[in-house]
Length: 342
Image (cartoon, rainbow, N blue to C red):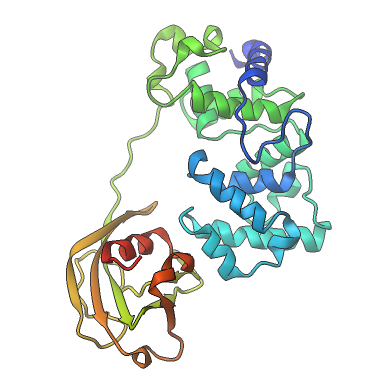
């Protein structure tokens, strides 16, 4: 079915895209050559993050680091602070690592093929395909969540393997980058997860799910396993107008980030036994909750007034009034807001 319908799908979809394409800060205009740096950066930022969230962050980022060379020379602290709130902080570290390799080994220019791109830090199959197609016009098959949903409905395909085969069959050799972005735009605007706007879809005559009336059944997803619940305590130690921050270990969750001190995250509700220093701690009545990929976290909040010298020489004392500039991960920014310190 995919092979039979792919020519008309590509033709109809590209015609729709030429009229309805989204204006996005990382997207080249029809008469412009795509900037591989901006394509790469946007694809990394957009992983599990919405366009509305990414757009202003992207603009601020490229104003500060407009190319591979400037990013390769950026400090880790500045990059991690600029990334705060976008999740998966390993992606930010990989951005810098990748920029350094591009500058050192490729003269500051991205390689153009999927195979070469996959050899760069932090670039997997999806990102390599997206860069190859959008930045370099290679006939690469790009399958993100929007594309997966659209293809699953077009062919009533179940399973990622079947979706992939169908997507490959319908990807044209010409205008592959526009085709990939058209699929993304159609999935975002028309072929939405709930209540798809099928009467506005340029592909409805080719859509098997529309013909069967079961659009919202696809894509078929396995039942999600319940995530385990973990608990911890965040400690707000304030000396004068400054609050104690720590540097999280370089490996592991939120590695290398500035953060408020916290005890271990375990299966039982915590107490103050793991406080970072001796003080007259007060447990607040409120808690902070945050969802990570593999577990949900509930954090108790403890506060104390302390002496600056009590925390040791490696303590990071940060002005409370400018805590927003510390680049705290979202879970710690939530805690700071709940405590009233930011």
